[in-house]
Image (tube, rainbow, N blue to C red; front, side):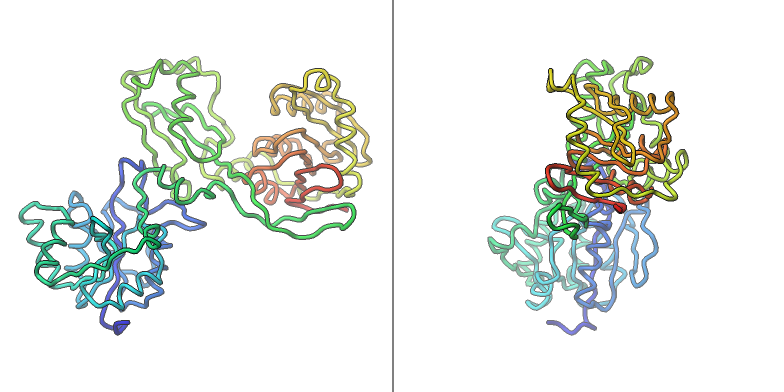
Length: 458
């Protein structure tokens, strides 16, 4: 590998893709912003200096050890980023990486550098200009010429560089093609990271024969999506991220805000609410001004102050305090609840199509059960009965028949229910809220066992 003191590295992080609908640099990628992940990848190669090329309107934080360069012209695309760094750097060689190549590895970049300066990755037909180890001064001259002549095609520039001996190709092998997957659209994101909408968690599994044991598992991701129409917020929907444009379009049609897709001029993701919630605000511009007075699904008010998971939970705590001291119940009592629930579900036995919520005492006595076609309605009915009947919610266990969503956990917290159990799985945000609220959360309560996602049992 080349002497670490003779080359710089540069992350080209500027620009926003209209096809992607958001600033890819701030996309959360496996627990951290994508730009941070890419900078860490470059750091592993120990360059003399590490540069970050950005547009002027990008709100990057100050990062120790990083030289930020703002593109002098914002309309030049990747060439503008390369030009800005190559002018500022004094190194003979510069390793370049694009921010929207999330699968690129330090091992591949190290191999690239070992081939010597001027080595640029190249697929069967095209150069990969944002994975290259450039000769700085020689390439800078080509960049200056390209800008002066308004020829901003990097493929043509690298063809000239190759003909002049400034660049040479490192062919991309079949097994390496995945590393060059570029995030151009949200569909690319789903294709290269199919598990992005699952979250790995550590839980405790209980079985009557073996007791509690720690285990890794996955829960479905749940995040709020704020939908704005012509600048006005019309709804915040809890959903699994992905296909957001389809969700919003279907919502507007079923709410009679639009009559067809032709009524929509543009849909774009916004990141002006919170960088950590990147992609969770959708702005829809319609061809005409709609009548929004008759919307039946109103803004989800408890999360209206923010649309990332953390902001949503913080807003819940502004309304409902966390559980300070939860009284524990025994695993045997928890295991007995589903049979007692099912025995009391008269309408379910006749129709098979209802959700149920039930409150039990800490001794296992059924206090109230309500059914409804909507799981949230069933819980609201139970809470309403409890308020009218003066039930001490701090002394009960809530059992729900279906999936445990964030909203169910929020509703239970609103009246101080300390223990929530469900026949099915919780969502990621439900687990997060339970952990931060001090609630005990049990899922997959079936047969002789269950999963303990938060809290403890006596």
